[in-house]
Length: 476
Image 1 (cartoon, rainbow, N blue to C red):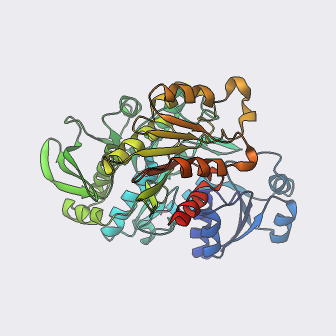
Image 2: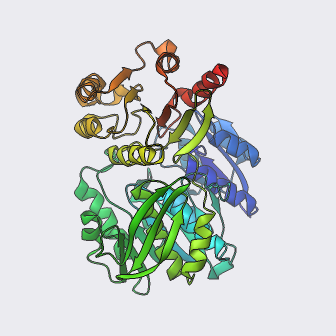
């Protein structure tokens, strides 16, 4: 077994892979800055030793066999510079996953702009419920498993399910991560422009997805959203079996007669135009119906019956931070957290929240934090995606100095445009010393009976969840 050091171990995927390899017998250490729950807690619970901050002394004290470089790590990082100077073996996390975890297993890669974490969690759980003991890598913490990554339980004859991120691999490898996962079966949920820091256009993103499609062997399979024209376009050159899923009747796998119920959604499953059976999924929103359809298609390819798949689906739990109910407090105030940060993801998440609680007022707290939403690229789209929210709380733009006044999201303009739609809007962060306390104060003054407070962020929102939880608990 090897001694492996992770530079940037606090990333969700990095931490999960580190823990999985630790459980396989490797000696794991690492480092990162700004570690916060749930990842810091996650590492602590699994006895992973890590350093706070980057220093050459960290590496000197460990002298590992291999150094894993996170994709957020760039030249100038003190540990990276030391590893290069000392000619240590460097490896990117996706390459490590391919070598150590995927191996000769059937590789299922879940790709797309939205829905990757949820769909990967569903696929892994359905295969688990079917007794197939899959390995998996999820960019989150799937509640059914409690850990984000594990090896396959069936040696070289099993399945490994990977969340296929299109983001780049490492400072020395600018390919999309999913290209290193050797797909035998791939899902493409949808394709939109995102990650403006590494992709220059939608065409640039489509190029990466075409490469993914071209990697699938002729005896493999591609499961693609038939309702997404861009996904269908990039799939057109496939040399393997292609099956479509969607809500339209022309798709191979389609959902009809969708009903929203107290604990989720139900639908009639049709395959190639023929009714198969009714399914219940403990999920809300049509986008989650699509995620479920793609997962059912993969489970069927893996040899599971629809009856077994339907039974497994009943026991599905959502991943953390995907429409996760944090708690319900005095006055029937419900706090929900979600990872959504792209305008489309914000829109469909809010629609799902409205489906789940149709009679309740929705307050949305949004943190512009990603490398795309902190810029003005989605200025118009962000003004159009908060439809179901009566109140919008806009957090501080993360690191606005990167793009300057001309390139950053204009939250004042966004406030005006949302107010013209009849919404109440609060711009937080005017006093940096009282952030996110100013959000807590605003909500304490404006909450009404039965409100649903939705937090949307791909980061920590400066500790807002903890601050709101404490505030709501004090009211009780």
